[in-house]
Amino acid sequence: MAHYRSSGKELRKSPKGVIAGLILIALLAAGAFGVRMVLNGMESLVPEPVSEAEISVSDSEAESSEDPNALKLTTFLYETAKLHHGPLVMINSDFPTTEVDEGLVSVFEQKNEYITTRDMQVYLMDEATLALNQLAAKYFEATGRRDLLVRNAYVSYEEQKQRYETELAAAGTTSGVSAAIPGGNELESGYSFELGLYVNGMFMEYSTEGDTGWILEHCAEYGFIQRYPEGKSDYTHVDNQPCILRYVGVPHSWYMYKNNLCLEEYLDLLESSPADGAHLAVKDQLGRSYEIYYVSVDPNNPALETDVPCPAECKYKISGNNKHGFFITAELGWDNQDTWTSGLS
Image (cartoon, rainbow, N blue to C red; front, side, top):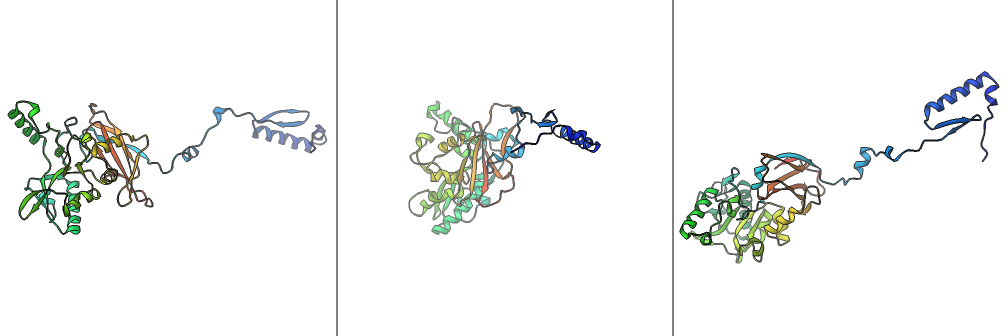
């Protein structure tokens, strides 16, 4: 293809040509940094090379590379001492807890007609009591029985201290004490209780035989686990005790039940799911989706509050582990459901 090359004579033929040429040159000079020179009447447009440092990506383009379904987190201040409390705390002699200061309710006053308590001085955390009422109602619906008995539940730090010191004084040595150290009793969580049966006006041991076995088969649907299951004593250091139930909440109870995990195993799994890494994705028995992750906290930090990354666009629950951090459970809802309102629940 032929290229037109100006000789420059066209600009000398008339004033109009001169003016037009000057305007054209001015426009080209103002409009592009790449005008390098005019040689023999020919305008040569050579764009300057763009250095690598000058290449940038817009915020919108950068964001597009991120997973649009990733859980968005924002930082909230949370009371550091709360790491000792919550339905997912680990309580034993290695990790003693502190006194529960809120949330306890009288089971006697809050229970439905399907539950009996040892006496009026039986206490559990409010969410555990609500779930127990739901479990007992379904138990009655399934079996026609209303014989569930809450024999023992919350034990205060001071009460546990008295038990321990009484046994220690009688035995004269710690090796002769069966009571846990103060803070080391599972019942001090406020989420655990000893289940029994109340039959014909008599208190009886809980049995997994017959209709009453329905409880252990279905309690995970209502947030409960068997705290010391059979075959897990290597982790729990306690033999099989089907009468000790612990409220951990859904979806944790369902995941543990379906995967045959005791509390110790499950909490170890959660601690391997940090906030800035891969979260544990689970579904409950109804098909609702959740993401669970762990936030490590220095228990020796004297600060009263700790920055905890929490979900910004959905509801969540937070529990301490009684060791060195918090577990956050984000409630994503059903797969086709809009995100829920954010905040603690």
